[in-house]
Image (cartoon, rainbow over all chains, first blue to last red; front, side, top):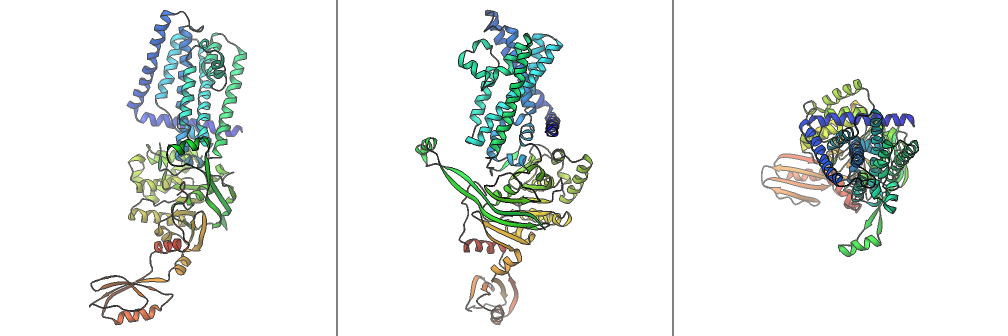
Length: 265
Length: 335
């Protein structure tokens, strides 16, 4: 089990290096995409800034808190797509039969599949979040360490949810729409103040669409450290990751392959 | 020694059926109907170590499905498979170190990267040492004559160049068995021949067992000692290529060029073509004596040139399909 985990981490690291190197091949494109994403995300700062000029707080959150939500969601989203760039294409890979080539290699299918590609613009999301966090929170080492930790857990949440949603393809045919929808939900729910969610919505973000664990709980912990919530967060991230892994392999047994003429991109 | 053992292998696919039009679509949401398609239906065969075996059949016969089960991509519905002592569906990872697979219609190389990068990446995936990868790349580059292609992105290569790189890539980890699914599909005659020569060389030099699917009779004729013909998921014929020709080749084609105009009127001789002084006839050696016929043909006039040949394997195979009353596509999801 441990050697298996080590092997997988090694594989992720290898793809990371390889992908980074090949994205650098097109340097201009890389820089444009990264900067473009930073500017794109940055425009939302003005929206919130103007809003908070007029109101004191929203659902108990001030400007700085909302920006921290943004910082974590953005960096975590970026991180998950930089490392596991193929996570959004799982449905397509299953449907076209491209999965065959991963099944022929002596590696863990899921890890091999999702980490074999990177999304260049996701680097922009990642940098943006880091800059934003330091911008609103200053350079406090312990806060920043927590920020990095929560980025990792949140990235695992994003990845797990996308793996689960896309793996539905094994069972129902084409889950691209559902996966897109769930991904939107995750992002939307993790960048607004918690106070605005009541009743069922609150239940949802703490369970099936675990957006609360992506950014809401982490910001609460950064502002007001609580070991209890930290542990709850860890338990949840492990549960979701294990479930996602299991669910993918459950579906893989139903895989029927395909014969489309495809290229590996 | 057998390297592949397959016993009573079956694979069924559940296919959702839908009536045409909107009404059918709505119906299939509330009351979906399924049809079971037997892509592979109870086949058994063995492959010997070091053999080149052809697995042939028309589109939709179950060739790819069988290869996919042998390589661990698909789980069989029932039956036993043993490849190098491993069960593909259970020991997928272990098996993948020992086999190499090329799907003619599916690229396994990274589209935007030059082959050299892909080779190095594959070396890492197969956990090969750097020095070994270098050695292998040098060897395969020479064997496949791809030195000048190594640094060009795959997307810029022609199909023939790409398939050579694909096969080279699948051999990087020195597999014991090579599965080739329609390796010559879409290639021109010259490249086809090149690929065939390579496969022959591989079998000789590396002692690899080669399992080849194709519907190109030339592949089989030139490469294989034995062929398994499959259709509708069932084995129709499992014979040596020599026997195949002998048993199904009672027809001979004779081309004769006379120096003068002749009028052929011999029973049991079918005239295929007649142009000027040249005639092409076909005879069935099971109903008449070749010796006699040739004597009579020569008697007709002064002969400038004569050739006697076997009909191409292609014809033989298509005869077998017809004799066994089998056609093409029944299983649509597989070709």
